[in-house]
Length: 199
Image 1 (tube, rainbow, N blue to C red):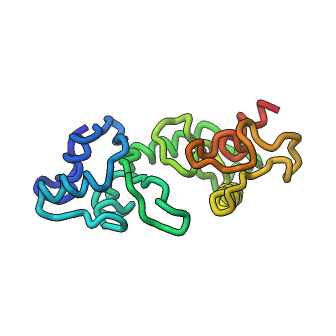
Image 2 (image 1 turned 60 degrees about the vertical axis):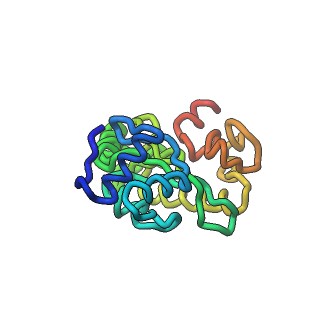
């Protein structure tokens, strides 16, 4: 894809470096970028470092984050906010189109059936995707509930058990321990419709 940033800006240089290191698709999705190598290349190119973790260049609302969703790898340690890799996870414009399409296609919350205050929920909240099938429609209340369950899962290392809300199975795959590599796969909240189909 074409570089959307002003030539000569640090964001322009960063985009070019990412394109060269790992490639960027037409939808604005890149491979994972090693932060240390990125910093070295950026310094070589501009004379400035991104200054690593927390830098405005790789935040979600400035620099690269002004046009792209920026996904950061999991923290090095549970108590740490530092990360070692990041990637561009789609243009904000393309993702907003998918959100509108997801909501208009279903017209109702896939969990409770409400038809108001609808949101396009990214099925795997730990990663940002750019394809239609990676989203489901949830109302605001159910989306908030899902976020609370996901937060508890990440904090405790124990996956949400669907039997706690009346289902006869706990998850479609995996066990009770949360595995960051597999993300939310198999959890009822990951894909409510698919979970119900498999019952």
